[in-house]
Amino acid sequence: MAVRIIILATIVAAGSAVYAQTPSAAQVPPEALHQAKVFETSLKAAIEKAAGQLADRAKEVVPDISLSFETAIRVNHAVLQTGLVYFVEVPGIEATRMQLWDLSRRMSENPRVANPVRSGSVAPAIVPDPTMMTDPIKEYSEFTRQALVDAMLDNAFALPLKDGQTLTLVVGVAGGPPTAEISQTPRKLYLTMKSEDLLTLRQGRITRDEARVLIKESRY
View (cartoon, rainbow, N blue to C red):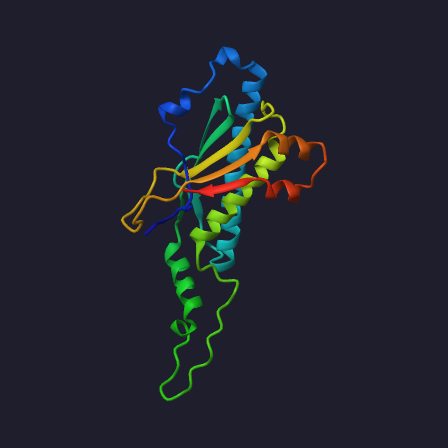
């Protein structure tokens, strides 16, 4: 039975108040619109990278496991007076061999499931294997967050941002909570970087690690 793996992260509802700030197409130069659209491709590639990292980790546990996106990656953007906002829908991942994956997880938590102790013998000390994948949801979430941050640092230089404006990623789960196992709506993740910080990074006046710290991260 396929089981959905979702990133417990994000997205803001683009309400009428937000889109009321959106300049008309005539106010935004065509080249600027093109660059804003190109960045969407970078964000999609970042999510694909995160999924690939998850697949590599999963294969360390179950070599023949097969993973695939449940839905397409969706990225849209809005050009606001305050800058650019990208709405990213991260798809769940379907594992066709989840039964084996779950068994491997349970074995890592309790090795005696695989090697029961004979009656009258002393049970050996249980030492968890650090390579086991016990929380794929958490790993997928972190891979995705890191990949999106990297996309901001690597590919946002050409975006049409003016002084005082910001680049914001609002990242969320495609389709929202999928099953009754999720008791509440996932919190939203916001990644925001100032145009001045992007420019400083491009000019080499700060390092990549210093720029990473300047990205504001919030969840609510």
